[in-house]
Image 1: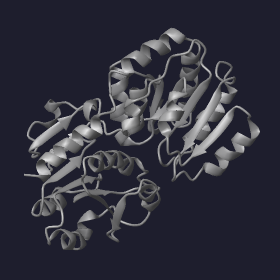
Image 2: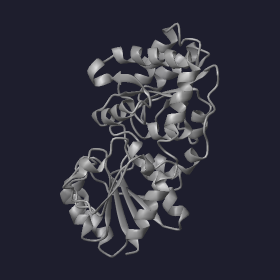
Image 3: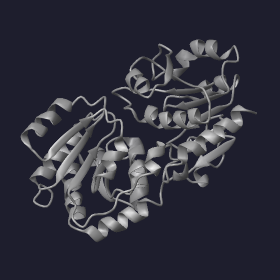
Image 4: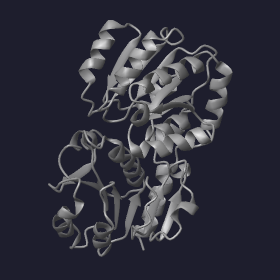
Length: 341
C-alpha cells in the first residue's frame, strides 16, 4: 500500500491533490495499491471522480500533528510500504513520526531543508541542488523532469496557427479574487484582444462561478468550463493561455501553449519568476503587488501574443523542452524502489 497525504478545499485549492493523482495513477499502472489520506471529506469529489480510494482523518488540515494518533493507528499494523505527503502544513515532527513506520516522501515547493524524509521532490523550474545544501532529505528529485503530469499531457502538442483564435484562462482550483473575471473583462475591452474566443476554466472551489456564467451569457465568444476531466484537450485546442503559477504551467509546457503567467499567492511567485527568467513566458504580473492593475497587464500581453505568430512559435518550441509528461512515472519508479527495500 502506498499512502498519499494531501488536501483540497477552498483555501488551499486543488493543486496538491491533482498532482498527487497523477503520481497515484502512475503507481496503479505499475500494479501498486494506493490510498489517499485527507483531513476531511472536501476532496472526495476529486478523488472519487478518478476512482481513488481515500480515508478522511477528521482533522484540521492546518494542524497535521493533531491527526497523528489516528494516522499511527493505520500505520502501526504494518499497513503500508511508502508514505507521500503533499501539504505546506506537514512539519518535520509530523514526518519524523511517520518515518518510524515506513519510508517517507515529500512534494516540496518551498525548498525546505528541515524535513527528515527519504525522498524529497521539487519539480519546479527553479529547483537546483544548491538550494538544498544541508537538507535532511536522503535523496532529492529536482527539476521539471519530475513534473507529475497525467500521461496524456506527454502525448499531445499544439501546432502554432498563423492566426490566434482561442485563449484559455485558468486560475487554479480556487479564485478568491475573481481574477478570471477581472482578466476576462479587461480582455473583452482591449482592442487587440476583444475579438478572440475565451475559454475560462473555473476550478471546483471557485466561489465566483456565478459571475463568470453571467459574463458567458453576455458575450458569445466566452465559454466557461468547470470540472474539466480532459484538460489537455482544451489546451491542445488553444492558441494562448493566461495562467496562474503552479502545476498548470508544466502541463501547458508539455503541450506547448504560449503563456501569459501571473501570480496571486506567495508560492506561485517563484514559479512564475523562474519561467520568466528563462524567457519561456510573458509576465502577466503579481496580484499581491499590483492589485486590480494586474488584469490589464495580462490583457496587454494576450494581445501581444495574438498579433505575433513568430513569437508564439518561439515560446511554444522552448516550452516543449521543459516537461515531457513522464515525470509522474519517474516519481512512481523512485517510490516503488524504496517501498520494496
